[in-house]
Amino acid sequence: MSAMGMSSKGVIQICPSCGQKNSIGFQHLGKTGQCGRCKSDLTPPAAPVDVSSEADFQNLIAASPLPIVVDFWASWCGPCLRVAPELEKVAAKNAGKFLVVKVNTESLPRLSAQYGVQSIPTMAVIAGGKEVTRTMGAQPAAAIEAFVLGAIPH
Image (cartoon, rainbow, N blue to C red):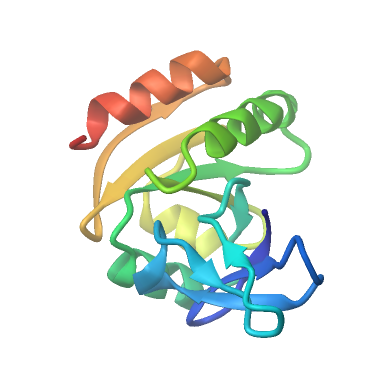
């Protein structure tokens, strides 16, 4: 199941059976949904989701029952580019446990400033609408997963 992106109300996913775009409401993240066209199951997002706006991000953290792992990054940042495939592995392995989102610090500088991001890559864990912890620097998938799982209740 690939996540395409985000809208103001949910994560946009493509149905693997028919190709239909479906919006999975933020409040339903972590649950198996159903395609609006073919009724096939839509599993929780198993790939990092790009955050498109500050408002979408605020809606996500306010409504999501899942913890959110936020990757603050930029396209010019070498370590950010190296950590991207590691985050893909983490997102795939933990679909339904938490959601991985990517915030481009160049596109959303006010969001980065709001969270006091001074170095990238920075990964923050948000649960219940509040930041729980953060870490900086590129890390392998196993270290990222251990960091996140150590920060959230199981």
